[in-house]
Length: 111
Length: 114
Image (cartoon, rainbow over all chains, first blue to last red; front, side):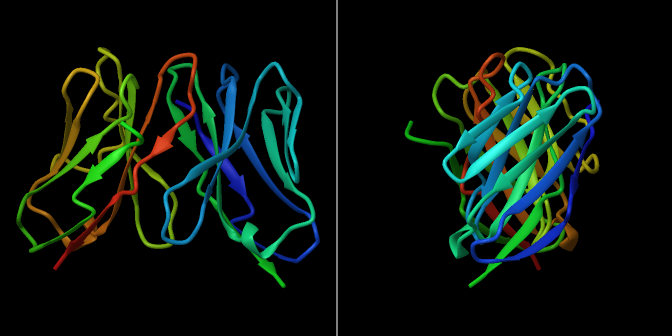
C-alpha cells in the first residue's frame, strides 16, 4: 500500500517568513495530493490539493508543488501570519483510491 | 446533511466496557474513513469503506475494534473491552469517492477510558 513520509515534524518561523513542508510517497500510481490544516482542538480541513497532471498550484499565500519523478510534493506558505499556526497534514491517494496521510507538521509562527 | 456528523461528541467510559461511536457522512458520499488521533499525534488510519467494496480494515489495531456501515450511510465504530490506551479522538471523514477525493471530517468523538 501507499506510504507517506512528512518532514519536518515541527517548524518554527518568524511572522512574514516562508514555511516549507515536504512529503514523499511510495505508490507511483498515486494521482491526488491534498493538504489539510488542523487548528488546535478542531477538525482537519482541506486547504489545497493538486493532481498528478499538474506541477504547481497556488492559492493566495499557499502553493503546492509536485515532482512525480521523484515522488515528492511540498507545501509552501509565504508571508506567514500567526493564524497560520497549526498542524499540517499531507496525503496521497493510492491506486486503491484510499487516502494515506503523513504524520503531520506542527507549524508555529512567532509574532 | 450539512456536514459529517459524529456522536457522541464526548464519551467517558470505564475500562472493560464496550463503546459504540456513530458517524453520519455527507449524503451521497460513498467513501468513509475512521481515524484515531491521540493527543498531539497524527491521524492513525483505522478503516476505509468505499461503496459496496469490502472494507479496508488494515488499520484496526486489535480484534477489539470493529466497524460497520449500512449501505452508503451511517457507520458505527465499536470498541469492545475498552483499555486506557484507547483514549483518543476518533474522527470520521467522508468523500464522494472515486474521482472526487475531497475529504470532509467530522468534529470527532473524544473517548476517555478511566
